[in-house]
Amino acid sequence: MDSEKLKEMVAQAAIEHIQKLDKKIVLGIGTGSTAKAFMAKMPLIQKQITTTLASSIETQNILAKMGFEISTLGDIRKIDIYVDGADEVNKYCEMIKGLGGALTREKVLASASDEFICIVDETKMVSTLGVDKPIPVEVIPMARSFVGREIVEIGGQPVYRVGCQTDNGNIILDIRNMKIGIPSDMETILTQIPGVVECGIFAKRHANLVIVSNEKGVSKQYPQYM
Image (cartoon, rainbow, N blue to C red; front, side, top):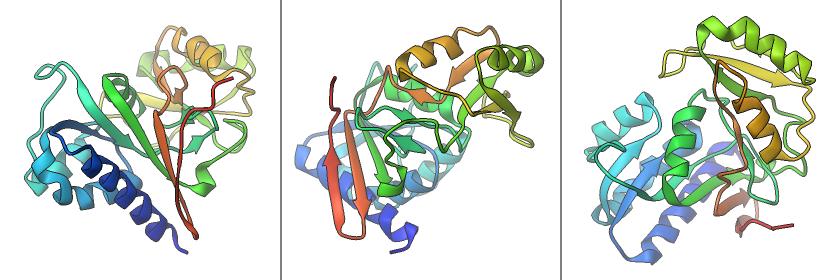
């Protein structure tokens, strides 16, 4: 089964999850190809959506073209549901996100939401985060070299993402060969480096629900606490 079909399956499952709530919601939407698959189906729940919040300029433009109202966190106090994809997810519903470059705004919206629904195909499910995928880190441009040296000191290999400028005007370093250990601890270590805006480890704000697709269908996973 091709990847587009798998994305469509989890997008539909997320739509059905929201439909069953049978209430009006403020909806936050992520960035990337899986988020686009979800947005394509949003007209099915249009009557439930009071307003939307976008995690990127790209997502905002798509929502505007579809005719959805767009708000900011200056307009509202909280988001009922935030829907987004991920690059890797473990059994605790902790994630690595940001290969699309929108990690900071995504983490802000996820943190402001009551429920974070992550939609992925089964290839994104891993036993250990950061083994196969790098950890993206958004960095202010003037701090690039300093942050890179600090990352080397803690055992990572920072690689500058050429040609990438975030919606916030910053750069991204992708950390390879980094042993994460406890994801929430590494998230703290990375975000405390001066010059780092945000990192792509979503452990402190993990998903409440992960919807996973494979060729057999769709399943739901909730955090497995230690």
